[in-house]
Length: 328
Image (cartoon, rainbow, N blue to C red; front, top):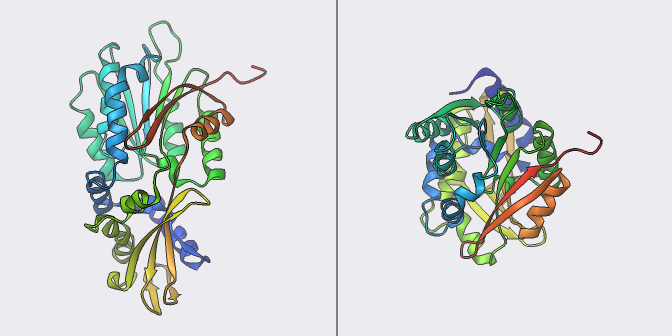
């Protein structure tokens, strides 16, 4: 279900994206109720090792990850998904604090509901949900940071997992991390999950699986525009395509028109023409080398506390701590 603001934003972004050259749409719009469930299914696929690799790291190192955070600490997860990974980190922390405040930030009401249910299994956890984009949700959460027993501000640990940073182009990722740092105080933390470069064939298979789940996930964006905006996309006339762009170190996902056609979007009073082979670019997923992640954090005003790497699935989890700013 849309709020008025989110529907207006969706309509504006669809209008801009379908009128652009090349045509493109933001991957945030994958995550309606059906899209959220399809993504959870993708995470179970044997060809998509990212989630299992990250989960293995969190299971193995949860105690070390939360060690720098004590009484009054709170956790904010940006893009909470099902909440299972957050729960792995909350569990050891809530054992040694009287109460743990957890803030969930996601544009998907389905993801927020799933995460609330997951976190409900843990004792002494107070959960707040924010249906918002990342920056807005983090601003709401940090405005309510806990006051510990000594009267000081409790530290905030921000989770940005699942290699969501990979959906941002390098300049946008740098700006995003800088904006996160601006919302934090010295001693706050950012746990950043980032997928690493792997053989091209493995990367393409992860985004174009033999069961067609990722294809359904991608095409659901067309179905969503049909349902919510009165669009006339025929899903059978578009193909899912995933390709590895080695030069830019990213996997690209597209919806490719199989023929020349015209699409109407009633809510926008818009007609969109497609040539045969023309695509809507729906996602870029950037892949990193471990040192790239550290440098990216340092440029934004963090220092690397520790980095953990899963060697088989080739995934990194990096704990970055906000440094005191010069002149303060």
